[in-house]
Length: 394
Image (cartoon, rainbow, N blue to C red; front, side):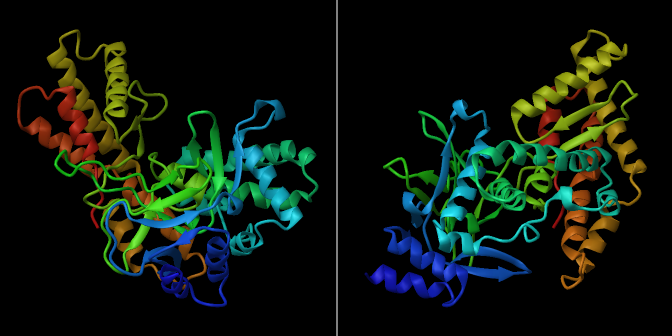
């Protein structure tokens, strides 16, 4: 009872979030040392007092969760099954406190909602084309759902957007599950910091409870009063974050980078997408670049010469990309720092600038040049280490 009395006031009375926390607790869940705040125009979940890594922050009972398990007999994807479940819950008036806390369709904009002029601000033609191709894909998905629900097309479209931007995926060991989890889905995204072997592994913050049905949120590291509770939605870079969640993340000095960097025009032998962020991705990218070089007659069969060729080609491609871009990283960073939060288009402009800053390849080019300047032939492992060091400064 003491925990209840302390936790509930952290959610301002009269708000949808307060009703949500009250409902979760009334249904047998737990809402601990957290509160909802809006900072810099962004709603998030913050701790009300110091917490230790692994400490339980929220536990949501199954009666408050909208879930779908994979079931091929319906002919729908897991995302579409959950979309149908959410429409059904809305039609039947179930989980009303949760439904009341969800935004409207306009309140959850994605990259596919941007105008052509706004998409041009990304300075990324391939990503812009993916965004333009997304509405027909979403419309077809909604049409597949409609025969299974009794709702207008606009309701199905809203439910699809909520699932796309808020759902969590769980592998139960028996089946694959996708769930909408009240309170927990108020936590924003952040790529976790790079960890050394001495630091140990970060805790996974969201997991199914011991009953296999409830969902628990724990602190994945020690947090001080007022610090934000964050999840990691994806490890795929800002392009995927923009497509599926509508925002881009600024990478700080202690975070790994998971960007996909498009190097070279499609007509050049070096044309390749470089996927950063893991040993496997780096190795695959380097292998692809080696194949391009070998096919183009560069480097011969000598491994040492080939590694040097890879390094040289990457440095040249990075520099060429930077020259092709209409603005520099420094210019984008200055505009981003001066952007007014009150401007009507501030959110999309901020996302575009953030994407551009992180995509600028100046740090990659500089690091590759520094490798070449050391003399000798850098190994593929050294190149991969340099690629994983890509950062944008704060």
